[in-house]
Length: 218
Image 1 (cartoon, one colour):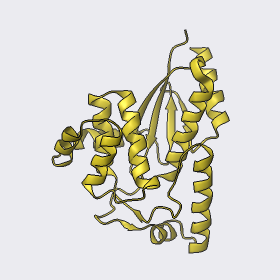
Image 2 (cartoon, one colour):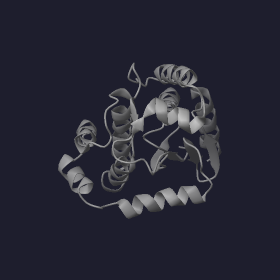
Image 3 (cartoon, one colour):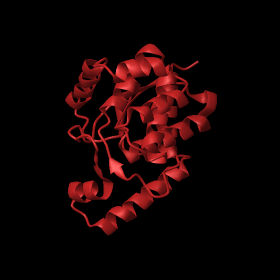
Image 4 (cartoon, rainbow, N blue to C red):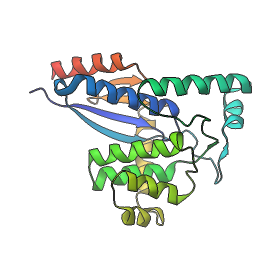
């Protein structure tokens, strides 16, 4: 039996391409079946760490950030939704309305990995992405985060304790700084077996090829 391929998935809950990339990775893993085993770990990256409470209108944010006209932003958003659907990820048909700070979401993802394990971390990651992109509701409202925890089958009481405290703030910040220090400046970024970097929402076939090669070499 080949050794599992370790995947460190650095991403932000506010990143649509991260949702697409995760969908493509999961589709690749489903296609590979028992051929490849993986150890999947999620790590934080904040695209908008200084976003204030209440967030910002998404069209306003993207036109300001990328300096492109609203029409082009809307075309891009449609293209991303189509890419997401192709890998089994459903985005809200009208798109997300606002861009929010995601630090509390990252704290919950960190907590799940530490206290409940990798599979639980994957579930809460997916549910928080769904909160942002499928439901397109506020990430500032702690009840929406708690609902994601509930859907992931995790302990909502424990999650409330975390959200009403500073627990895991230091650890989450340290993890962010670690990957920034390694030169990660865009997401999604996948580090395979601590050596190889894949960036962007790769096609399913690219993930399959990379994982198959690493598994056969282990």
